[in-house]
Structure formats: C-alpha cells, structure tokens
Image 1 (spheres, one colour):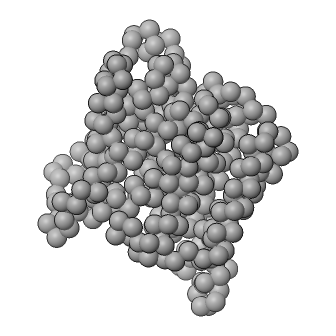
Image 2 (cartoon, helix red, strand yellow):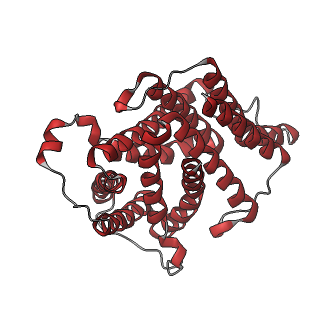
Image 3 (cartoon, helix red, strand yellow):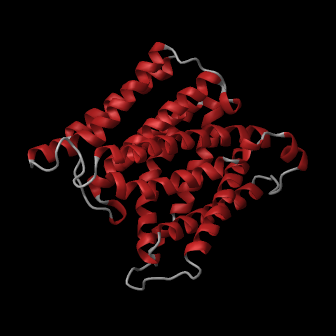
Length: 316
C-alpha cells in the first residue's frame, strides 16, 4: 500500500513540475535552460540528502568496472524523454504528446517485467495483466483524447481528428518517436531501480541519474545559449518557481524505490494515474498560473477505467 501511495504522489507532482518549469521557461526564454536549472537544483538537493543519510558521493571503481554499461544510462534516457516532449508538442499537439509516450511507457514496462530486462524481477505477462494494460490505455484515451475530439466535432473543427496542413503520414515518425521516448522513460525507471540495489541506496541512484542529466543539459545549454538571458518582464521571485527540481528529484527517487519493489510495469501505471489526476486538478483549479479547464464527467470516467486496469495488473 505504501508503494502505491508513493507512486501516486510522485506522479501527481509531474504536472506541477511542468507548470513550474513553464514559468522558468517564460523567464529565461528557453525550455533547455529551465530544465537545466530544474535538474541542477534537484542534483544539489539529492547530494545533500545523500550525505545526510551517511552515504558517500563517490562510486567505487569496482562498481564502475564490474557492472553493465547500461546501468549508467538512466540520466541519459531521462534527458532524451524530456527533450522529446519539447520536440513533439509543436508537431503533434498536447493530446498526442501525452498519449504516444504513455503507450511506450506501458508497453516497455510490461516487457521489462515479462523478460526480466535490466535485472528486473520477472512477472509474466498473463492475459489478465494484458487486459489491465489495455484498460489503462483506454482510460488515457478517454481522459485525454476523447473530450477534445468531441469538442472539435461539436464545433466542426478539424477533420477526423487530423491536424490541418500536415499530411497524416508525415506525423507517424513523430508518433513512433513518442512511443520510443516513452519506452526510454520506462527503461529509466527499471535502470534506476537496479542502480539503487547495486549502490544500496535509492537516494544515491537518483543523485547519479540527476547528475548525468544535469551534465548533458549543461552541454546543450552551453551549445545553444552561451549566455543566459533573463526576461525582466517575467518575475522569478515567487518561491514556488524554484520547486521544480525538488519535485523532479522526488520523482526519480520514488521510481528508484518502486521498480524493484512492485515491478517496473506496475510502477509505470501507478505513476501514470497520479500524473493524470494531478493534470486534471491543475486544469480544474488553475494552480501555479496554469489556464483553468474544468474537469468533465468523461475525464473522471477515464480515471476510473485506469484504476480498474491497475487492479487487474496488481491482482497477478
């Protein structure tokens, strides 16, 4: 039960982090700069927590040489996933940017559990678990895609849900890339979980993942923005605008704890439900400067369908 609460909580924080980082993006004019600042704050926070728990900040040479190379790719996969969302949004729009990575996350999570990839505990993909995963996907579609589709149909906007001016076939590259980036996100969860077991510390595993991500983002920022610029018209004195890094740190830390505890597939799904719930509440109340979009009964139904899918996956 504790693991489920952790998964829901860290998933709930994702849309809050997105809203916060969007304010930093407005202030500095770059999503990469805002992501770098978020990662940097999270890295410093996790370093302090690591030291406070009595663990060292270094990694022994034996671990570096004896462990597989993929053990250190969690931070890389995290940055690719983050950057992919930035690239997908203008190509596919907000709805498809959510749906296709989610499909990749669920698919990869179940595959990792079924085959025991990344040293994960094997949990066979039974028919019941497969049905549960399908219910989660249907719930996502109902919660995210269906309300927008019905609104477009009612207003006679769009044609068959397609974006104007873009050949449908040309969008499939970005859709497939969205699925791929979601698979990398699920892989990051499994990798960080195994890294936590190797290091005997989920906190230290999260720190290493964040540190690698911070270094990569620093290189991107240096390459694209040699000098940081700040837009004085956007205030950054609001204390909550700097909480994104802390939320991201708890997200990576929580996943490093969940993967070896309940399995990657279930961890991904539970976090997803927390994420969708948080997104709906941010829209409902307009938290952190977000635009208000009241929750509909259809979206609540979608969440209930997702919960039903989790129940089926959890029963096996």
